[in-house]
Every structure is written in C-alpha cells, then in structure tokens.
Image (cartoon, each protein chain N blue to C red):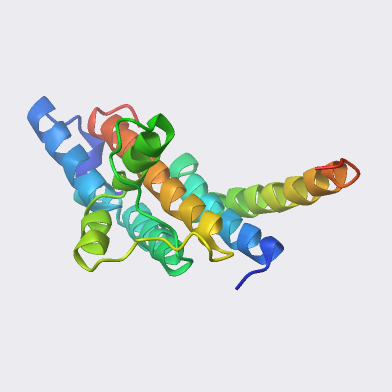
Length: 57
Length: 131
C-alpha cells in the first residue's frame, strides 16, 4: 500500500465519515453529506496536485 | 422522536465524566448519552484510522519539550485515548522513518487523535443540552 492517491482516498473516507457523523443528525443526511465531503476532498486533492505539477518542487 | 438521556442537560460533574469517557474510548461519550449510531461510527472509524496509521509504520511521538512540533504531535497522538496506551503497551508505534509510508502513518495517527478531540467537544455540547 504505497499509492499516494489510494492512501489519500482512504484518509478522505475516514475524515468524511467522522465529519458527517458530527455535523448531521440522521443517517440519510450523514450519507449524503459524507459523500459530498468525500468527493470534495478527493476532487480538491486532484485539483491541487495538478496545479502544483508545473512547479519545480 | 425517541427521548434519550442526551435530551436533558447533564450536571457539570457528569459532563466532565462523560467527556473523559469520550476521550478514553472514541464514541463512548455518544454511547453514554444514547447516541448509539454516532457512538459506534466514531468507535469504528477512529480506532480503525489509528490502527491503520500504526500499520503504515507511523510513530507515536514522545513528549519532547525541547522540540515543540514533536510535542504538539505527541498531544495530538494521545487524543485518541486508550488505543494510544494499548499501542504503547504492545510496543507499536515505534515508527520506521525509512519506510515510504512513515509520513502517511503519522498523518493517520495524528488526525485520528485530533478528530477524537472534536468528538469530545461534540459530546460536551450534547451533555450541556446545546445539541
């Protein structure tokens, strides 16, 4: 397990589950909010990764 | 809607006891207050996240006052409660800095502890009747 993307996705799953349970009350709301968070985390990670790609780091 | 113990504000002494339980075992505070689904979610997610960090060769940082960032990481690590002490007891979390997953493991362990601190704050609000 050394894929950066894979580990980022697993990390995003854990964080999304906890935040969804913290911030929403009913299971249905938690699932919807958790999926939106997960998509946001992974999408933002990919976007920021590509934005940083041209930089000579 | 089902009435739970959480629908009533708890006395101050009980609130702090519940918060201590919530810190010691992720989700225990919510379980105590009758929020079973949330409690089980936190218990499973946070302990799994912490264990995953250990499996990735993350390190449980020492309380080194001379190194402020290490000290902060140590406080974040201990935020997970009993799993931290169990890991220490079984000599896990020594960390292997040459492993490619070392920093990933640290991130999982630290964030699991920090998220549990947020869970404790949520328990405090519920016990005070604010949620």
